[in-house]
Length: 248
Ligand code: ADP
Ligand code: MG
Image (cartoon, rainbow, N blue to C red):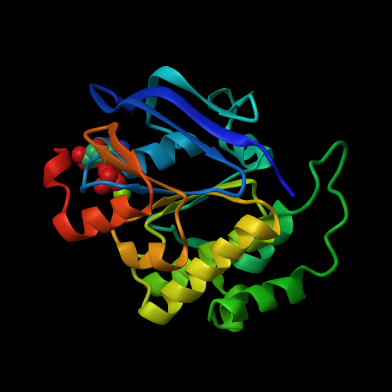
């Protein structure tokens, strides 16, 4: 069981000429679920991208650490190796590479003089994970996300999460594009991971429906690049009822 923390401290970041995150702090511990809500354009996806190291963003101030390891100093692949995972709001198409093949590569041990052995039972594991969240197993062999529906792409991300067993996962609107049944299955899968291996979750969402299944320990409201409210699950209900106007 993993224990540790993903710590974001005073993060100021943006794109050239524009600051989007204006001093954001929050800490997610292993096994915890934090929901991050906030109006369109408040910087939620920017946070996700900055955490994972997407090119094009500038860090002005602040720190992001995973168990004390400075993530911002690392290239994206090493952040992943350190245990960070991002389920993208809009998963990209990767023609020519199947989900199974990409996970096969990703799960190889860090090469110190050559690729290590392939984990033997990846195939069976992927099939079980796909079945668990209602993803057709034939899609595991298709080019990653190519011609898939929004809901299939989101489920794809969750199969990756389950296969890679990261220590912390940022889920950027994992609920968008999912029908109610898929939403419940995905929410339950992620919730189970918090006890199965102590996954810590930062779930970006607009909707309380996801949080009925994936139960948050802490809810944050982001407005204009800052956390303007933090509370328990009741905060998500309040936002659901009253919207974001009170936090503008
Ligand atoms: P959210 O996910 O909360 O809806 P985003 O983080 O996607 O918000 O965007 C925050 C603001 O920053 C928006 O106004 C968006 O247009 C802008 N922004 C984010 N990334 C970029 C980028 N790479 N280039 C230009 N503008 C961007
Ligand atoms: Mg977004």
